[in-house]
Amino acid sequence: MIPRYSRPEMVAIWSPETRFRIWFEIEAHACDALAEIGVIPKEAAKNIWEKGGAATFDVARIDEIERVTKHDVIAFLTHLAEFIGPDSRFVHQGMTSSDVLDTCLSVQLTRAADILIADVDALLAALKTRAFEHKDTITIGRSHGIHAEPTTFGVKLAQAYAEFTRCRDRLVAAREEIATCAISGAVGTFANIDPRVEEHVAAKLGLKPEPVSTQVIPRDRHAMFFATLGVVASSVERLATEIRHLQRTEVLEAEEYFSPGQKGSSAMPHKRNPVLTENLTGLARLVRGMAMPAMENVALWHERDISHSSVERMIGPDATVTLDFALARLTGVIEKLVVYPANMLKNLNKFSGLVHSQRVLLALTQAGVSREDAYRLVQRNAMKVWEEGKDFLTELLGDSEVMAALSEADLREKFDLGYHTKHVDTIFRRVFGAA
Image (cartoon, rainbow, N blue to C red; front, side, top):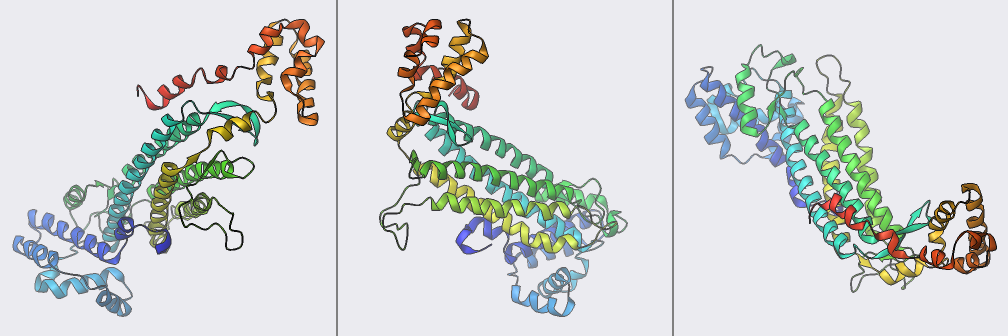
């Protein structure tokens, strides 16, 4: 997590100040529940809220204490006692460190998920606007990077919209999965703390009680969360890669906005490089790379160990901050994307009608020619276009075997671009609904 690829709202979730404030709220809510069931005095719980709630936790002071205790939660509780006084003896009653750490991480990850879901919503809005703008903008579809058949640029963007709609659904599911609370004490048996405390804390923090916590929240939940971030990052890369290909000089069907004063190269003043989408490709690799350690965290020893801790201290902030930045950057790219319909049409026509080969093939089979012979007839004329720069329609019209099966009018009709876009409205209704 570095400032260059960070946005303040997401970064704030992972700041020490935020973490210690959440720790305090977990402890204070637990005290409220303990007071309600008669384990600690109600006045003590009130005092803990008043003095702790008004406190500004000193990160340097906590770090100073931790250098002695070698334990972050104890260092925090020691510092908290400096504000609260004698009633601090009621804090952390029957709890273990993981109750605080794991529940806090759940709060942080759910807050991060809320930001990521909002990021995807912004991206979806941009994709929808541009998809409708270019619903009928004819372009060539490619398979293996080679011209295939016509489509529209709007359909390309509609596909991305549908993909990120699925990404949103996955993020919502991942948020639901991770929004769980454990206040169950050592080895998760509630031996020294009533389960009602966990229920109270969970409700106050917008979480669900973990059905069975073995002192820690099971890490399959976290694996699901970070794997989901990896999938979303892969979708970011897919769209970024598409734009990078379309911006190549030989293609130039779309390109990132090049702002006044922007420089593309320190050596070559003419350069306009796809730097944003290249950056997104790299960021996606990072986010995906953080999914595997989360999966390896699932296999903890017995009821708990802390091999997961160092991993999560890094991937929690890094994965969410990086993906937040990437989604916001991609939204900006789509909003400002420069599209060149004339170049799209020029590229489509580069090989003089070859993109209509399937229609000719099907027409021949429907006219009674075997598929094998039809394929041979179409391909031998298509190869003249590739190898000699011939015009596909002209070659077909001059082929006696082709013309024995089709009339000139029938053949010319197979070169109508509109044929390929007749179901675009159907695709858009499937993707965007009645809109």
